[in-house]
Image 1 (tube, helix red, strand yellow):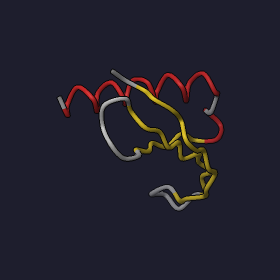
Image 2 (cartoon, one colour; image 1 turned 90 degrees about the vertical axis):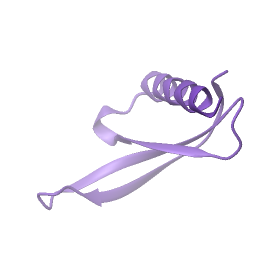
Image 3 (tube, helix red, strand yellow; image 1 turned 45 degrees about the horizontal axis):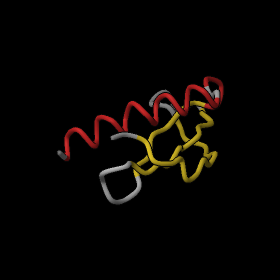
Image 4 (tube, one colour; image 1 turned 30 degrees about the vertical axis):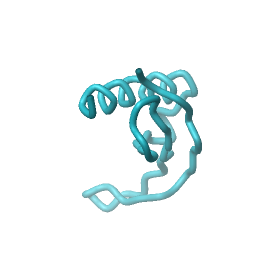
Length: 68
């Protein structure tokens, strides 16, 4: 159960509620048990490969557990 693969990481720009520009990474991944792709976002200034992998694993575990 859990993370199968990170299939993509893309950078994009968004705006905070206060109107400031914020650069983000969107991480796309698949899980072992659930079909489809899932995403989550990390601010560019907080991004590290280990952090992205850990977050993807945690989210994949939650998704697979919820889907049974």
